[in-house]
Image (cartoon, rainbow, N blue to C red; front, side, top):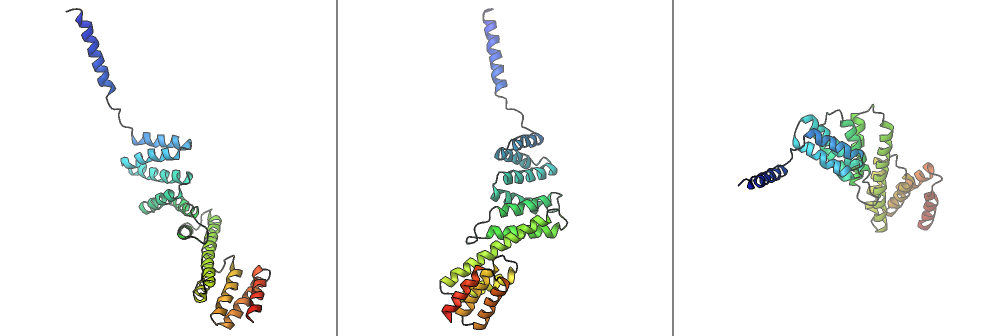
Length: 247
């Protein structure tokens, strides 16, 4: 019997060790996940950082940590160039926390998130419109910002892209034999985008549209605006050739 005692003790030790090994580790705290996300973020592991910060956000440990995690998630998406996700995250942040001290940064980054999604002028311009609205809202809410000049440049580029979009549609209508539809678009460009960098093209196609819809005097005025405002434009020579054919 005495020979069996050490064996029994060994079995008991192994059993206790096995039990200890299967004991689940204590869950990490929200603060630990926050720090883990910071470490991953600093290493450029943005997707992994988002995962860590989502655990902070979903823990509902405190309102302060939740807000911080939401902002950090949006920033990680932005720096990872996942602009669709960053736009959604910043939109949600601003909706949930409109008066948060970080709202200025969130709104600026929201505009940039949309701006980075802008497509060529002949394609869908939803992102351009969203960027424009975001930047204009930014200037209204934060008129004294040091970024004012930079944001105005973004606004001008967005408006130019939207004007170019309307111009491309107008060209299509003219080529398709629908000058009345082109005319409406071009008139809207002149009215809505007075600082459009491609206004010489607008006057040229506007003159064509007026002439093709039987509005001779309006056509002359459009071509004269082209000659007067943009004497060095390539469209001046094209307008002269076009009028020679028509008259």
